[in-house]
Length: 257
Image (cartoon, rainbow, N blue to C red):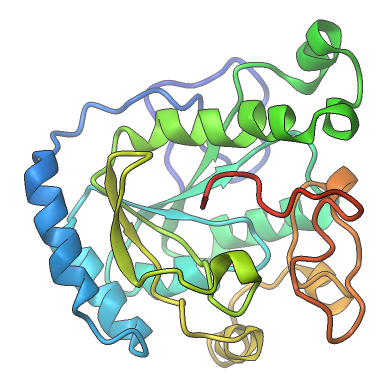
């Protein structure tokens, strides 16, 4: 299920797409103090009960909740939509995704009770190349991630009171201490991580049990999937995120750090 947001681009849209430029929505928001109190309430939940956390988030933030999804699979959108039908699912459309990622995005939009929202950068890839030179992701990956992921996401999250992510503690050393629920100081809203204690096996088991779309790259050595130029296969037993920006000191795009 998808809808078209009020603010759209003039670009053609693929089937099932809701184009979004990252402009703040008109939804009323509670005060920072109220949101901080809700974050403290959520932090007391059982971090092994993802279903209970999803239920709490849907009840605490009716109509002001968003789910972030990289389209490695549709597990998190499915989980949240059981308690918040039609929930907004934010997909960072960087312009550099694998074809299989776009295929998964289309299936999530078509098969799940969610509203997929494509979060777009200010510049197209061609415009970015013209302004900064081609293949910025090789020369300055941090700047590329900032322009194509972090800045568009920040603008879009301004319209919500809470966002849900699929961050897990087992993914990388940088994520070992990820809290279940916290107040996201960077974006000014509550951040909920219901899968924080899950393993990759837990994710795939849920996907199988509920017939949730899974990116085919997950079965081809890509346990963590980002932009195609910056993602490589991971050797069995290696850090699941070791294929991201391989050969560089960079391990995170900056969204969760």
